[in-house]
Every structure is written in C-alpha cells, then in structure tokens.
Image (cartoon, rainbow, N blue to C red):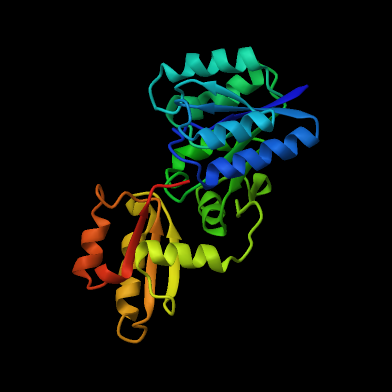
Length: 256
C-alpha cells in the first residue's frame, strides 16, 4: 500500500482542530488506497484521538524533528528511509529539516512534497521561499496566508488555499446548550460568542477582548466563551477583568 507521511513537528496535547483534520484526511486517504503515518514530537495525550487513529488504520511515528537543531535532519532521514512514503506533507517543521527536505525527498524517491502553512508567522521570513519553491504544492490555510506566501516570492502556480474547517455531525441541542450555560453561569437569554484558541498573542485573543469591551455598553447581553486556554496560567483573564468584561468572559480551559 502506498504511504503518505505527515511531518507535523507537533506535540499533540489535546484532541483539537488539527488532530481532527489529520484524522479525517487519513480516512479519506485510506478510501483511495493510501496508508497514513503521522509523525509527532511526542506521544499524543488524548486517548480518544489515539483510539480513532487506530480505527482509521493510521500509524504513528514518534520522532523529534520539529526543532531547528541540526540533529533533526538524521532523524528525518531515518524516518523517510524506514517508511518509504510516496507523499510527504509538512506542517510545523522548521530549520534544517525545512531547508533540506526537498533534497531529501528527491534522494529517497518521494513523488509529491506538500507544505501546509498554518499561520502568518511562518511564511514572513523571505528565506523560506528557497525550499518552498521546490515543493510540489504550498498550501495556505487562509487567503491571508496565501497572500503572504505570494508576497515573499513563492511560485504562484504551486500556491493554493485550503480551509481546514469543522468535521463531524453538528446537531443543535437545547440540552447541551443549557448544560454549558449552567456550567459557566451564562444567562439563558444571553448572546454568546465562542472562541477556540491556544494561549498565544498570535491568536489575537487580546484583540477579541478589546472588541467585546468596546461593545459592552451597546450590547450588555453579550457574553464570551473561550476554549483552549488555561485561565490559571494565562494573562488573558486579567486583561478581561481590566477591560471591565471579566464577569461576562468565561474560560472553558483546555478540553477535547
């Protein structure tokens, strides 16, 4: 069976959006006759995620290649040699691996090399165009990312946009609605905006808090629910309090 290797460069600490995307991609690949191998820096934490990966026939390869350290290169070589993939797709690899991967792929007979660029900070360094222009396809997860890719000189013909989206059944449930409003003390009549993000300035949570504060006088019934940030280890809850919206900002923490 032909193999697709995803070099994630990630530590998977939860069952989040990228995990769901990779799982669904593995399911579709299997239908087309491809086996999927996911490289992670360490063993994923979520038992539910691991169970679904196994059910989808997806294999794991635990190897530390996501850093800029030169020792990441021989680990990557060993991984490619042992798995012998037809296709490699990268996500968060950096440094020497990112720079040398087009050469490694050619040396080991990889037919397609894809780079998925997940955020604005990744393509902004102009030197990244050197290896990226040797990929088969460079994929931005938003129009903003693809615009920045073109701006640093990536060949237009190999750039495309692919939204990750949400997967699975989505069914409105009054029971679930009441359950979570009760958990966080949100009035039933309140208008709730939800944000899913990890704790990073990159995600713009500070901008969101400022926007909610700016709406507070005209939209006093507006509440904000934030998932993915540990309120005990983050500055953002203090920021919300200082902006006067602490009582209307609710922190769900890190959860599947």
